[in-house]
Length: 236
Image (cartoon, rainbow, N blue to C red):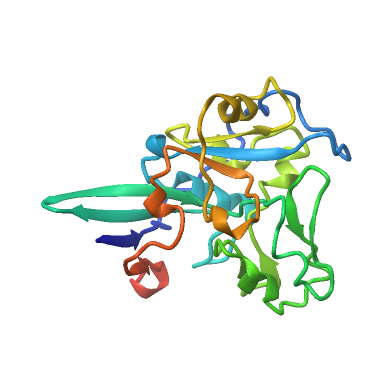
């Protein structure tokens, strides 16, 4: 039996994104180039569930309250007489075959040449078709803008040669980001040297967020009741 508890602490001191600027591994991105194929590797065994990635993402991208572009799902696992926890960082998978694109009636969701899936806020009408089409629950309607919202791999940072905010602030170094097409990048090397897994491989979306050490029981639907702690419901 696997019970899921997702918890997030919003009442944390502000962090300054970019205080320690880290360049992208391998070759830095250049605006307008399509030679890169950005991807992320998540080492589950290094994640401590601190939610620093979640906080930095919220601050970097002005994510509204009770919405998340990335989050670490925390599972309480019970097996026989033993009890433990399992951390699973989650975000948009920037799929090679993204199901969110063909369902958009106005072409607001599209994929850049470097593989990053983004939303054109000027075109988006907030119909939520893409939200329903995503098998990873990685999209939401921003209640402040009325538009579809999601992780963009911090494309505005990547275009300037910086790491995504969640990667830069990961305490345990669980998130590795880089160019899959660059043989010298850490992402390329990790995929070459290790057996990695993806979430819901049966969907055929070809995710480009890869997991090291992923327990197959968490690759798809998890049997259990998931609850999300919402600060607005617990006072100030």
